Length: 60
Image (cartoon, rainbow, N blue to C red; front, side, top):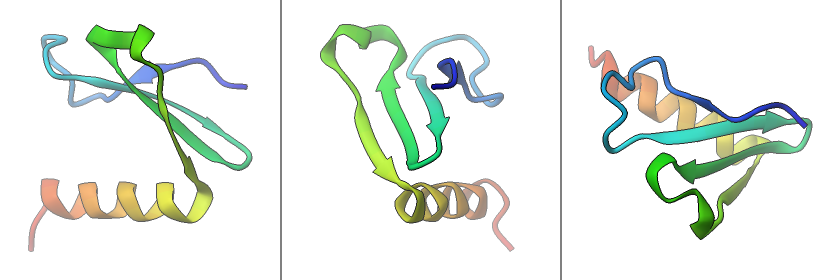
């Protein structure tokens, strides 16, 4: 499984999430509360989330 990484949009470490992609989708966790666990998204859910986030970042 891949390593956890933060978004390139995470500038100061506050209010960040970390993600790790894998063959069946991705896991996401709170950077400042890692011990709380993570959410798992299947491939379709992860692709939809990334697509929606990209639209929010670059409306048009």
